[in-house]
Image 1 (cartoon, helix red, strand yellow):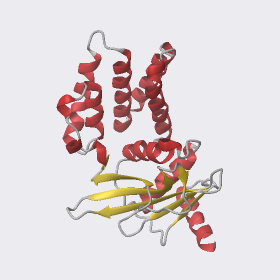
Image 2 (tube, rainbow, N blue to C red):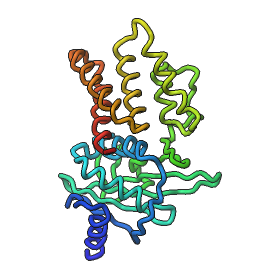
Image 3 (cartoon, rainbow, N blue to C red):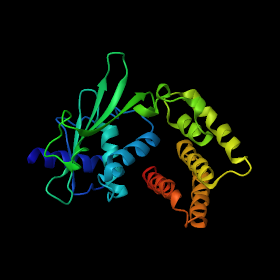
Image 4 (cartoon, rainbow, N blue to C red):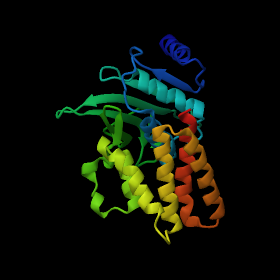
Length: 258
């Protein structure tokens, strides 16, 4: 008990504001060294969606809670030191997350998130058990890039993708040279006549993500206002709900990036 309190106290002091009392950060040692070099854009995009929204794991988390956890992950997780996070939640069992960096035989580095959520049984187990259907996500690390395994370029056929999907793939794959293709791809889409509203919103959502990635704060504000207006204009179209959910998650990401 004393160890957990000490760790939580160190964590609060390190980041200058109090973490939620419902979150406990645990590790054998806390050496602050900013081990994880991935750009905050990828951390806030992937880890907020995958560890809080997906599977409805903890959607009620505040921006302060999520930010505290992500900063701890970035600062303390290394190949030698995994980080354990316990989030108090309604119900019999808390939400457990274990973050580790693994090195593969071919020299790649992976950031792996293990949880105690059993995807098949749709419940939180008492402990994390990677052999027992525990929900797990892993990402390739390459300099400041962080790429979910299914977003890797060798897992996708870019030649058959729609242009909105292609722009999104360029933004999130592991290839730095593809970052330079995003703007032209989006420009081509948005110049098309008769573009359907779904593709129009998708392209503008990727454009917003790109502005966030570039830290283009002025255009982030303009693009957010534009997308809000588009969703309001087409509020009666139920097939846009998935895109609107993605947009709301992006608005949350914008707050995390401040």
